Length: 309
Image 1 (tube, rainbow, N blue to C red):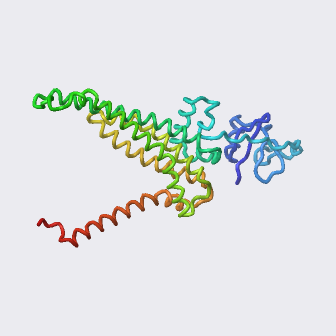
Image 2: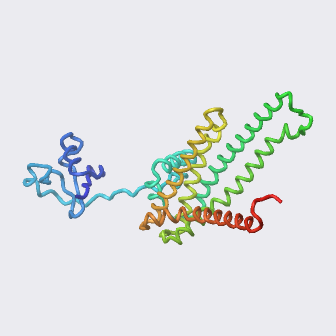
Image 3: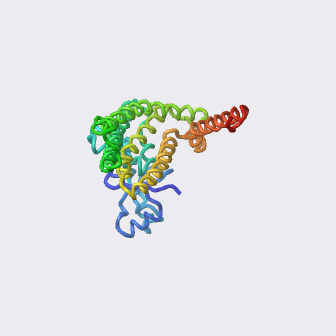
């Protein structure tokens, strides 16, 4: 049986099952004067006119006809779509939380049009933060290693250029930051493009490319920020390996969020088509690697095998 919509003073209270309505009337949460409507009814009527909820329904059956109140449309999600209203910090915080905790609901409410600029800005800005943290972790790690090397009397530091000891880790961190940023700028577009082509092959691409891009960019950006503490915690002795293991689980959840997002924006597509389309590039890469190894082994075997001459 369909849910019952309940309103009071032109405000929608929610949707309830029959049992929830009975409990609400008994507890006082709902009133017999509250207006109710369910699919198939021509108008809203008070609970006092419903036989299943009020013994005196027959006497009050002549309630005035009131048009159903307009149910407000959900706000566009994630919150970054409303960053001008919320501010950047709140928009980022709420977006990351919603994408990680409620991916299906978030991407179902996400506009699938409106341009690529907004999701790109979200993803790229958070990727910059992630790259900065990772580069800092690199510099800190090598600085610690160098300090340990300096304390080792068996190491002749005169053979190591002084520039490397003083500037090497910082220069390496800057190079790493620039390289990762360039790769991120390309990957933000390249990754959803490959995914969308794969979805077209499996006939799971019901929505436009922009829908796939938005899911990929928002998911990538949210997880890029979440990975930051794992980069730093991974350097802590003993417990660092635990955080590395947890980051693997986070990677699995990122795949799940991507798939749930694609299912939400490509409405009507079979689940197996979306899942196969998402993993198809990985499958193709694995097959190509296996073929390459088989070819290399075959060439070596044809030229006398692995025996030394």
